[in-house]
Image (cartoon, rainbow, N blue to C red; front, side, top):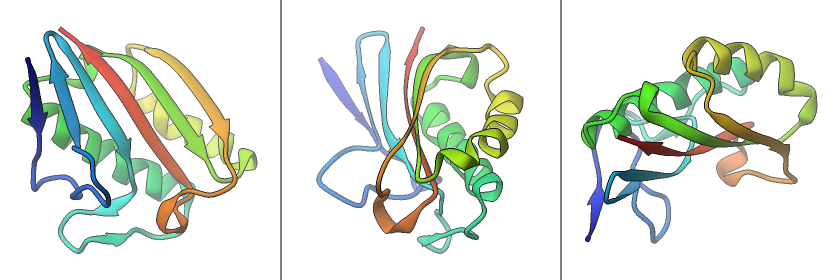
Length: 124
């Protein structure tokens, strides 16, 4: 059985998908954007600011499903510019202290002109 997870504490999906899907003990969180859920707008064009907003949004989705950041086992991180890797990594490392498995790649474009996007899998 699959359960759709939605919370107003994180930005609404900008397409035909769920914020997250719980399948058994696994939680699959869709790509999280650096959007302020209160305004629906992309935050400042600074990778560290955007990464912090993403982590806040991730917290909201995880919490809505009854998970915490310590339950995260895999992340996939997308950067619009690999030159932002260091600044992004500083924020990431302060948040994901349990060091889940990770892939981090540069991509050509991220929706809405964002500098970073993060998707993840959590497990209980």
